[in-house]
Image 1 (cartoon, rainbow, N blue to C red):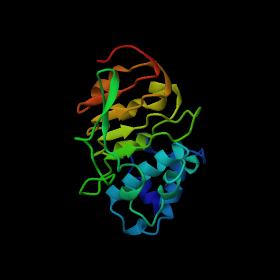
Image 2: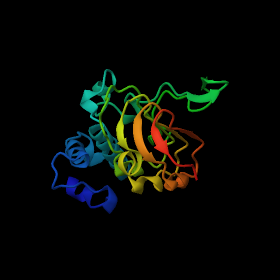
Image 3: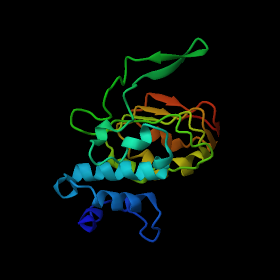
Image 4: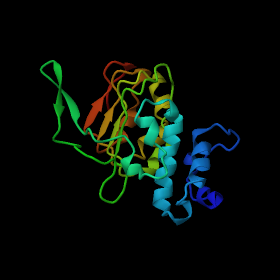
Length: 212
């Protein structure tokens, strides 16, 4: 059954089946065991594939409670997995961060159509890890916010943390918050492909370059 699903995936999101530990391979294995897999729409299969790939790439089982308990819980909607529910944007004003709760105030990670919109996972206590956002996140076409600050991630920013294929495939992204990590390298010009981006926070990383 999963083979038919894999055949629908674009090449840049395909699992590397030669590597059994690849996040996408584990995501396919998990998805195939989901009790509702055969009855799911293609949209939801791809959404869950993207989120399961993300969870494995970012060491989900090592996350603190309650994050590690409900992510990939097949008996809960992914819209209820611990991600949103905080929903404020911090803006820099008068030398300090100010909470702006006028935007993104949510009690679900999805919109009314069940599309995942908010990837909010901070302080995951994963110091020293070098994760990569899986290209399958491109299936989250309604994703408005990626907030992964305060995680002490390390390594190259892009390519590295953000693969080149993702820049042009996050059409709804408005907020990208990655401050207080330890990313290195140059801010890529491809960040200009995020046409709806209104809030970018890369403070306290070791990045150089200018914004397009």
